Length: 331
Ligand code: TXA
Ligand code: MG
Picture 1 (spheres, rainbow, N blue to C red):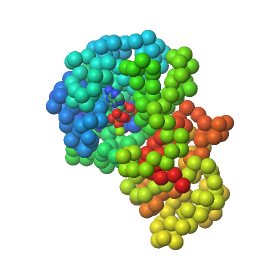
Picture 2 (picture 1 turned 135 degrees about the horizontal axis):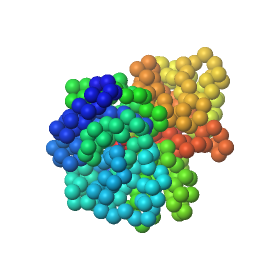
Picture 3 (picture 1 turned 60 degrees about the vertical axis):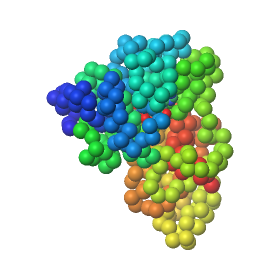
Picture 4 (picture 1 turned 60 degrees about the horizontal axis):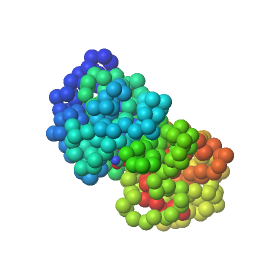
C-alpha cells in the first residue's frame, strides 16, 4: 500500500479488524497488530516464528494512552515521557490488567513506545488503538529498514505493508526498563546511556554491556544475523583483517571486508561501514541483507574508541547488533 491518506486509513481499519500490517518507523519497520485483540497479537508470533517468551512493544500516538497501559508511572518515567518521547526509545513500566500476558510474555511489566516518525504516528492514529509491533522480520533475521525487506520476509503472511520511507535511525529503539528501582537499558539504541544518565541524574547503564569484550560463545546470543558466517574485529587492525580475509579465501570462501576506510585494504572485496556510528546504524541491516546475497563470509570491523567518529549516540547500539550478528565471534 502507498503512504497516502486513503491507504493509511485502510491500514488502520485492517488493524482494528484483527489483521497484521507492516509499517515504517524511524528505527525499523514494525509488524503491527491490535494490542487489545489477543488473537491478532498471537498471529504476530506465528508470522515471525517468534518464541512466545519474547514480549512485544505496545506503540502509541498520544502520551495520554500511557495511563491506559501502565499501572504506575514513576518520576523517572514522567521525565522521559515529558522530555524525550516521541523518540527512538521504549520504556518498560508495570502493566495494567487490561494488557494481555500474550503481549508481555507473562511478565508484570509492559514495553511502551511512541515513535518519532510522522509516518508511524499517522498510521497509529488511523488505527486508533494501541498497536503491538515487533520488527517486521522473520525471527533471528536482520530487521527490515525498507518496505521491500518487509515484503521479502512477510509476503503472504500478513494483510498489508505500508510503503513509507526508509528508516532514518536503522537500529531498534533503546529499551529502558523503568519498572525496577534503578533504571537500566535492556537494549541500546539511538537514545544513549550517557544522555539518559544526565537526564535522570542517576547512572544509567546497559545490561550485559557487549563492549566488555567477553567472547561469550554460543548460539544463545545469535540474533539479527545474516545467513552467512560473520566475524567481528574491534581494533581497526588492518593486518589482522587482511590475514583473516586471505585465510578465508584460501579455505575457498568468497569473503567481504565490511570496514570504515576501504582504501587501506587493497584489491579485496570491500563494503563501507559508514563514516560515523549514525551512518553505520542507518545502513547496518540493509547492508547485512545485501552482503549475504553477494558473499559467503562477512568480516566486519567496528572500532569504538573514545574521541573517534564511532563514539556518538548510536555506537553502543551498533556494536550490540554486530556482536549478535556474529554470535560473539570476535577475531
Ligand atoms: O524500534 C523498535 O523498538 C521496533 C519498532 C518496530 O518500534 N520494535 C522492536 O520490537 O524492535 P522487537 O519485538 O523486535 O523488540 C522488542 C524488545 C525485545 O528485546 C523484548 O524482549 C523487549 O523489547 N521487551 C518487550 N516487552 C518487555 C518487557 N515487558 N520487559 C522487558 N523487555 C521487554
Ligand atoms: Mg526484533
